[in-house]
Length: 275
Image 1 (cartoon, rainbow, N blue to C red):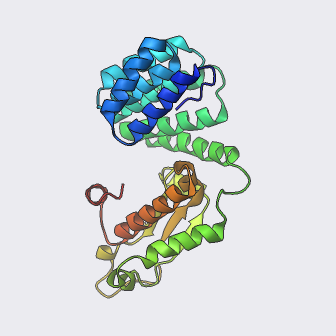
Image 2 (cartoon, rainbow, N blue to C red):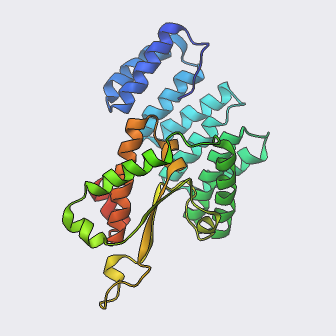
Image 3 (cartoon, helix red, strand yellow):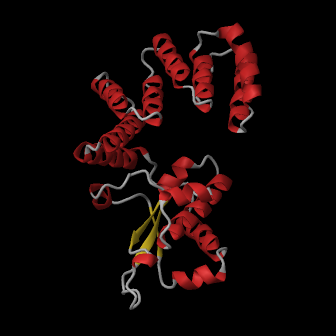
């Protein structure tokens, strides 16, 4: 959500309430707030942003794209409506159009490094969807370097506290699963390495099981290097607004990567609620 301190205080409170309602899934409350906000300041980018978000929540790409277009006309220097439009095109399987928009955005005036990182990450996703591996790796390497530069010198949470939360997530697994995990180590790193991104890994992935999944191991037993589980602290912190949410996301990511070790695919993850 954009922070617009020039808004009327009453309208700002209304929009804050609407965003909370949207996060809670109360679309009726969002619609009521939006109706009132339009009457007060229908052309304000902060109001149009909420309109776009509601349309996306309702799986209405045409309305979302129209809102982003009006937002861009109201504030031509803001890259957010361009990025939002590209996300809509990606969500509805039009990666070519997403890539066109993002390349046009990146070819324009120099972006803030945070916006550039987001745009290049999305462009990498669009290239992946198009089957353009070379373009994907190029944009994701740029994203990795920008994210490294944009992050502060120290992570938000001390590494030992982060590792404790990860260990607690593992300890919460059933004894049978822990026994089967055996000696699979769990490593905490800031973010994926350049080598992993060159292999095609999304630089903003939260975790990774790297190795041989249990169903693919030899019937003679696992070898000495069956795999490791990685957690990427900076990426997890970027996705979590506070420490409570971070702890929950660590738990989900540990479960996600453990499931990969046991051979679960992404469709299984979606069914188990681990995406």
